[in-house]
Length: 319
Ligand code: UDP
Ligand code: MG
Image (cartoon, rainbow, N blue to C red; front, side, top):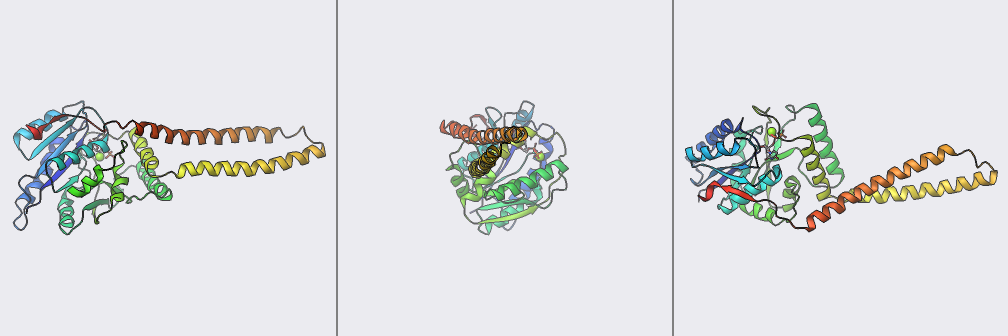
């Protein structure tokens, strides 16, 4: 039976690139639909997920849908962030009965021409096909270093994550069903997907510069994503707090011995530096530890509310 593919593009204020991206994706889908050896199902779609854009993004998506029924759209009730937008798109595709789906950024910085390769690997039996960037030469120095350090940190913390894998990925329907079983509110898809298991494969692709518009990932959004990744997959930072505790305890024993010796020798007045340093150091370590604890407690609190992940305000596929 012909495979029904959904190509999912999360869009947040992407009016500048949307039309040109749509055209390129359509080109790829069209050629896959008219493939002579193994064409895709004609029910395959290009699904735009409007993540609460404030510009003309949704109007563009609606008119694309009118021009060509291969385009469809889902509008979320507000801006939930990239991860949730991708997830909403995947759940929508699942509802539409897709056999497999590929997620790719709306700015097409990730090379859409690699899509047939993903499909090949899926047809060869992979449930998850990771897109792995071949280099980071289009990234700024800052993004390159922070991203590389972040992947190293995640590895050190024992988080299983595919290095340099972006959210350009193919997943089969059953892999997405498995992903939906993860009930956490804070989605860090990159970390969840390897946790699912199933047979996986990867495709290397080249990252391009953004053609129009600006990055929608502000530093703040990037930091939030990084923190989500760490806290939802590792409790090593909590263990670190325990280590701080042990170390300070050992140091305090040494200090106690030294103080007693000083007392016996009668040199109790000097020692102002030692005292000041200890106060600041211990105070710092305590506040830092409290902060780490607080981060986890806060997240536990937020997750305990079991709030809905997202709401849909319009769905072009349901008309
Ligand atoms: N995006 C989203 N919601 C957000 C931020 C970004 O859906 O709150 C989408 C955005 O439209 C794009 C993708 O996520 O399709 C990646 O964002 P962007 O290209 O701005 O990030 P960068 O490539 O600079 O990391
Ligand atoms: Mg981008």
